[in-house]
Figure 1 (cartoon, rainbow, N blue to C red):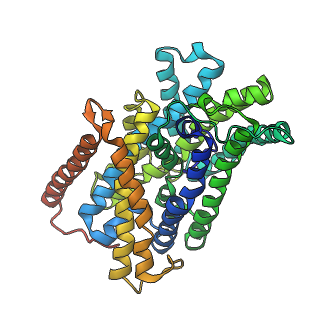
Figure 2 (cartoon, rainbow, N blue to C red):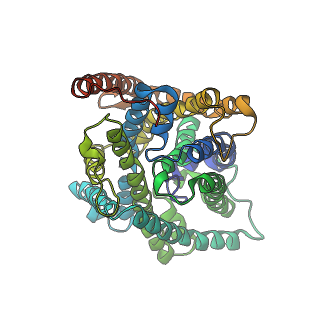
Figure 3 (tube, rainbow, N blue to C red):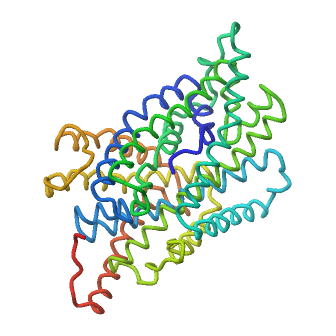
Length: 425
């Protein structure tokens, strides 16, 4: 749900160069991934409810803010989920450009959406097992690539570590790096389908933070040492690196791994996001229709609904998707950090199998760096445009729309159900 291996990192090198790019990838786990993982570790182990972050915010701050958390997360998912079919097509075009020409690219992207929806209907265990297999497969070409790079570098040359890039764009590179390290809270929405979540969530969060950083840093460091020019790197450039270092066989393996990345991330994220409408329906925030499950325990109406709305954003470019995704996702993440602090104050005696260290001050401090990075991402997106509107105005309109939709749903709920719905479960 966070990482599909080194795929998607290429624009960091192309925009910032090797030295700055590696510095970003080495520092961000400590000021972005780790704080978020600590927050998720505490809240997911304390309140292991289906719906995850939506339930935390609703419990801490009430129905309105819970609805806004769900609204912002689903709005961000429209742009986030469109990225992975785009990655699939970008890599496929490296070996079969005629297959992705014109309208064929959109057909491939729709195929990914529909295929993953059908896979999700088989239940969480099927999605989880498939994700593990795909992750191992898509990483395997990079084991060969790194070994080949080290072999060629050993004993000669200083690489391209300090080589400049022609189109330096630190803000854009940092946005891509933040995107590659985000999504830790997505694992929380399936808490009721996880064995022993009180123990397993904190362990998974902390271990995965380290693993993701390693799978990012080592391949980029290897190709830097062997001397590949940073200007060559853009989405899909790992294929060219593999062809240069080893040959067409490894290039083909990297392409297939890149295609697996698109499916491998899209599939579990669909599982995660589809639980949000399900949990909202159980709280009477959406029609009861969304609270239905099939025999495998999969919320099939939510899966179908999410697949439809994600298909609508498939025409956006990779960079534009990341910009608006960060703005909307960052807003929802800030609400989660606020919920962490509020629950510490309001429910100090709540059993917490895992705690963010440092007491109440620690829970406040852990959100400072993520908040600063989110504000930076918002500032970076100031010149982007989405559907003809500035990205920040678009994001603001999405937030206002969330408040209006909540008011409408509450109006109809109160007319049909005179009994108040409790804030806490």
